[in-house]
Image (cartoon, rainbow, N blue to C red; front, side, top):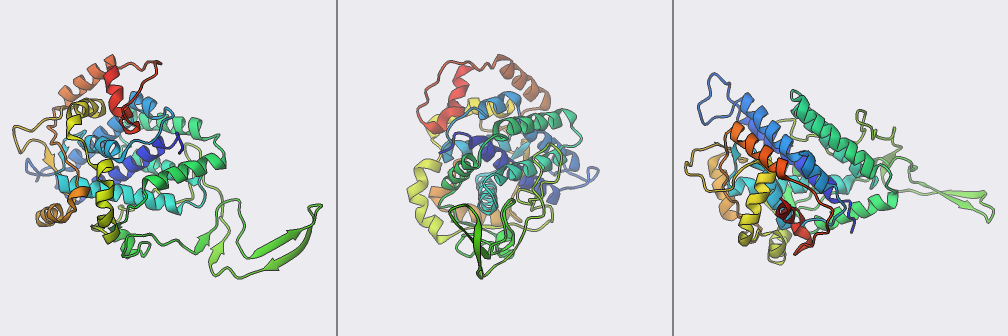
Length: 389
């Protein structure tokens, strides 16, 4: 297991989350002069994205994230995104949050599987960062946060060997193992089968630095080529036109990690039979521990300067529905296997000034010490760091 996997997992899943929220906010947009108090406007969409991106790329949080460490448990990571999604004025109920996390994880699993080279997972990450910068292009301070993270990625991963990237890719695939959730976009594009498994292509460009299959070369003891034999490979491969850019600005060439929701179309998720059967086996690793609620309150403050509490006013904040209708959302909540549902704590959004002051106060007290820290489990590192406040 690679100890350099967590930043890539967090950033790519976060990028997918932003794509989905942006698409749903655009779909529910109402012109500002016609919007009711409980309806979304373009200004609300920009505010939500700015709040989440600013929280996601917080400098202190990134410093902790980039420390060599094993992956968090599915339970802990799911909790992080729950808090991150609520780092602004939006509220998601359990069914919508479940669907959001399903779409995030399936999309990134597909991207990892389809990477031509293990190193290309870094290009996938850069594609996500490029798209995120496009979502918050009018906020220079937040853009600078994203650029700083890009520099951290370059410093940490720029010198890794092919073998180290292969270990990272293997660690990611182990994390996503047995996740077979059907997504309508993938099904319509015929890159996913009805059982939730992805279709590996037998055509297209080969990895950069490799040759199109179909030729066997034989060499003698002196390293001289003495014979060649051609064979039929059954595919339709072509040479890669060029290598994607690993610079701050450049052509990534690889399209994996770009926004597949840029064309407005409904997205549905369905549990495959295999995933339902495996639910009981994975319950412990994905279901939040209700006894950790106090620790999660601290985590929520780190991720957005917010308090985790039951809203006194049910209409407070803006509710976002990831389904086409209220009826579909209710049906999804009823039909989802209990083992694969996550308990979501309602979050009361505070006013901008209050949230900023709270975050500034907490971050002012936040210090990272060099003293070794022991954690009850490898998945609780992010929660445990709050004890150092």
